[in-house]
Image 1: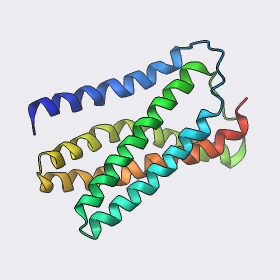
Image 2: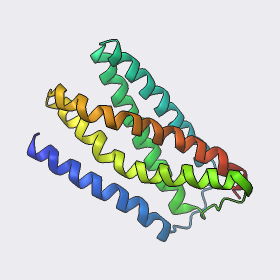
Image 3: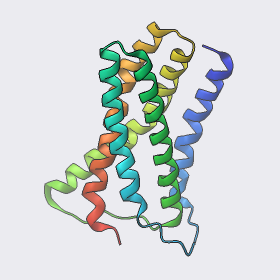
Length: 170
């Protein structure tokens, strides 16, 4: 893989999770009400899941160009999600899950797997993208077979986390 691209992948794979983790220690006071953002970024996660599903169908049907456009669109919706997620969490108080019973356990299982896999999926997606950009489709396919289902799970589990915690937003 292109050495410059490899450095960018490593940099992004380290910086993005560190920035997101540091959010919980940063609070910016603003007069703007960003309470609408969780619904927006949950919707972006849902769109990402749908787009990735369509991308998977496209490549199964050997429509490489459509697959490429859809994956790039999913990268865009994922990036927009991340920007809005960061904006919300640096300007808003943390919401604590307030439910009980089995839903509480379900919520935390989904949340923990969502967060853990969201860190893992970053380098996988970027490496897969890098191999595709280098037109090494053998290596791209090998990584994509791991990256795609994880990325789809992260997108869909983000929606589930939102649906479970949304009743507890202030």
